[in-house]
Structure formats: C-alpha cells, structure tokens
Amino acid sequence: MSNASNNFMARGGAWVIVQFVLMMAVIFLGVLAHGDWTQPTLMTAGAGLLVVGGYFGITGVLVLGRNRTPYPRPRAGSDLVQHGIYARVRHPLYTSVMLASLGWALVWQSATSFMAALVLVPFFHAKARREERWLCEKFPGYPEYAERVPRFVPRPGKPPNLVCNF
Image (cartoon, rainbow, N blue to C red):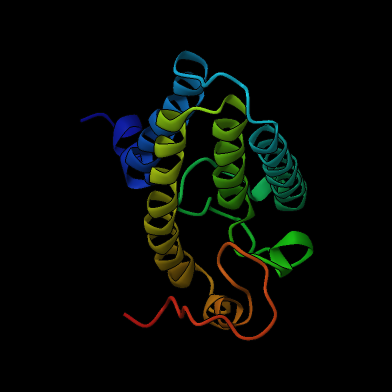
C-alpha cells in the first residue's frame, strides 16, 4: 500500500468514504424516489431543517478555519477550537449534515431518502466517538471540553457523554 493511501486510511479515510456514500444516497434517493409534494407541512419542516443545518455548517466552517479537515483524525498543528458554535456543540458540522439530510428528505417527501438520512445519525455517533478518541490523545484539555459541551445538540446543563474514559 502506498504512503498516500496509507495516510488516507490512517487519518480516517474509510469514514470519509462511507459518509460520502450516505450523503449521496440521501440526495439521489430524494430526487429519484420523491413523493407527490402534497404535504406542505413536511416541505416547510424540511426547509426549516435545511436552514438550521446550513447555519450549523456555515458557522462551523467559519469558526474552525484552518483546523478543518474531512478526516476525523485532527490535522497536525491544529488547535482545539472551543469558541463560537464550538462552545455550544462539539460537532456542528456533523449536526449540519444530519439536519440538512433530514430536511432534504422531507422537502422531497421521500421515504427512502429519509431512511438513508436516519442512517447518518448512528453513523455520526460512531464517527464522533472515534474522532473524540483521537482528540483526547492530541489535546489534554479535550476531556474537560467534552464534559462541558454536548456532542450534537445544544442544551443547558452538563452533557452525560464523557468521551475519554474507555
């Protein structure tokens, strides 16, 4: 195996591939297996989820800046970002994809797209857990951050999911 492909896998490339396939499934199933668009309430709810998902994604990208990578393993020389949207949720980009995917399926009123979007939820839970193990190794302050900030959904109080105690 070459160094490039070895590096790709070592940084979490398999997660990137699976995520891409799932996201494409949501998009194409929505278009190819859409409903009859007779439910304006579903379309409105879907549009709302797309907007909220877009907010999480755009703010996450802007705040993360040069630290952003498609891989779950943190980039060399990166910093632990804890401000902006990252002070409210640890994984706003994953939240963005989950919300936008569910919204897309609702706008298209596609049951098959919705099912594919639902698969993203456990996928991102698993991906986030793997990423957080790498973040714990790289950043000594990550366990305290994880205790203070919830994984995907902003909420008051202490989140119950500690990540660095294996």
